[in-house]
Image (cartoon, rainbow, N blue to C red; front, side, top):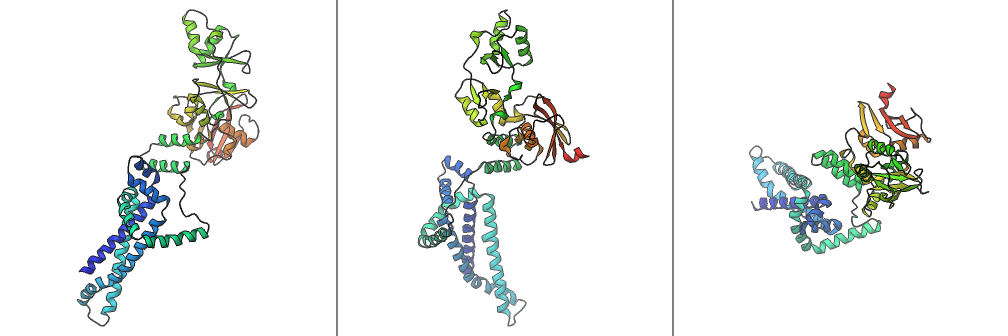
Length: 429
């Protein structure tokens, strides 16, 4: 009976060692960091252990191998007599001992596989952080108790790794792909909403997307000229109810400053004609280079009180204007897009109307397709078409890529205003 009790304790000890090994290895660093920030010293200990796990794994392997050897020695003595008694009820011949031993061995091996390996490791994979928190303290005690052996085997392991020019410790680098993959797993489990995943993906794209993908391009800028008539100013505000307008003297390349539409409204409410009064023109214009990323542009807006910036190229020519709202729409997307102004509109089951200024990342995500090639060469779907055609397109010019046909269906001057995206099979049929 004592042998059976010892066998049970060995299985239990082996289960704890196996569970500890998997739990510490599988515990998620991000979750442990949150727990450590909330005051959990054990979570901090696990993080430290993950950075230098050599001694821990050496202790685990010493323990598991010692238990396996002891299990083999005690197992036969513990079970064989009971197996022999059981078999004697049906057989008492000369092969009794030879039959009892393999059956005893099979039972002991099965018990260790099931209760000392499979079940504890499965539990450790299901809830690694909570189990790691529970076992970290006793496992550290065992490590201290086995210090001589741990130092010996860990030292030999490190020497072998160094001789092979391999790292002896893990360098934990959390990439944007790791974070997006984690959030994607949350989407599959239902704990994260699709729009939340989209926002996070868009945030990481802010460093890759340039300002030109979010700005209002030059040919779409609505501005006032100092010589404009009252009727022209009023009609412009009615047609384009913006908060701020550029004020120029003969064209965009002679920018004077900015004016708030409310200043003109005040003039009208006083019973006067709508006009651009020189004393209300703000000459403190906020300029941004077009080569900035969206993230850099957002940071630049933090240092200025203006809500609108004039975008210029390397020759100091105005190429567009951008507002904070334009930048926010870069990662908020459809969540802040007014109804009727969607950039991607589904026409039927296999075709979509896409605004030419739509970022290629949004198009790829909407169509569930792979990323566009050479993304550093352009930001928008219009830029993709021009890049592939290697010329300024005409109406009906098209590009076929990744099972879709991208056809130019509307031009405003030389700018691609709208693109018809069609599945290739449907287009050919």
